[in-house]
Length: 199
Image 1 (tube, rainbow, N blue to C red):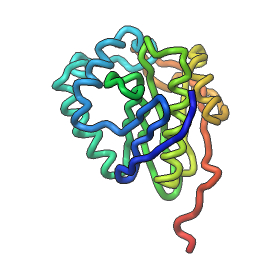
Image 2 (tube, rainbow, N blue to C red):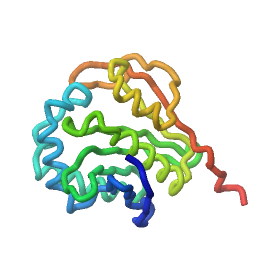
Image 3 (cartoon, rainbow, N blue to C red):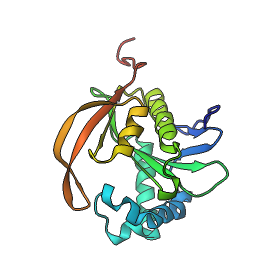
Image 4 (cartoon, rainbow, N blue to C red):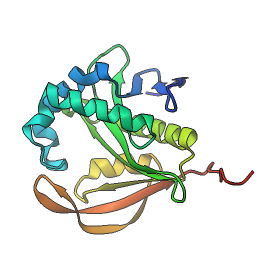
């Protein structure tokens, strides 16, 4: 894996293409694909995610949700990236940047998931590094935070490969699949951050 990155600017976040991946922010044309992704991976993702109601797995539910996500991206509040392999319309995984805040924290929280059949190929490691770089560059954020359950060693490996460093342990941090789960907190900082308030 590897190769040249090319960018197509989409205000303000570009589409990211590598030799083997196509990563772009979600649009209304993605409703069917994202619905299928969650339907097919429902049981696989269950141990790692909050409990979902049935509308979360329906086309109608995602039709409403995608409109909201597009609006949040327009206001630079949240970005929802879909990961595909070039030439394949199926969603391999997703990366979300939420709680995007500018002054004074210039920060966001990242989360992600990967399809069961796409595990173990390094796709998320490459995708997360690419989207972090774009978020830092286009939004001039200073910090991106993440959290993972201690037993999720795959997630730990993904974060470490993208430059995240451990900050501590948060007890009963998130309600995952109906249980309050401890999470290890990690973050990565933007080495090229600049203060936009200083001319």
